[in-house]
Image 1 (tube, rainbow, N blue to C red):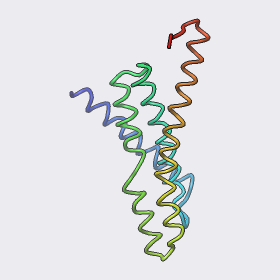
Image 2: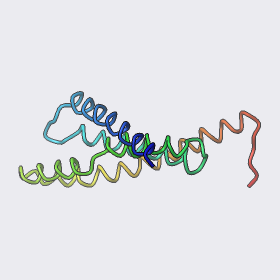
Image 3: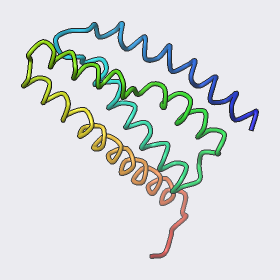
Image 4: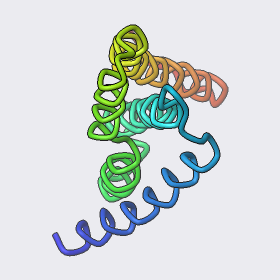
Length: 136
């Protein structure tokens, strides 16, 4: 258990730097685009980790904890997303608030699904190239 806590903590530190870097790269504007990019790219990455871990057993449990819980769990940010919606509503920007509020989770789900589909296709192609075929 102690090792897992260390892996999550190290991943959490890395995520803080990663998220801060993205927020510097894409400065805040009327719509919090950096938070949108963070949540959608994080959802894509979490989808890939889920497929690699759960479906193909490529990633160890320690690797999953480090990447999915430590790095990506802290990289993606629901509270900052909600704050963005609130700020738009507080500024009486109802249409952007609605669009942003619906787009982030919707695109996040599509990104995670897209990553799972991509990993499945890449992993299946890799198996086919190596001569390893599954029946079914």
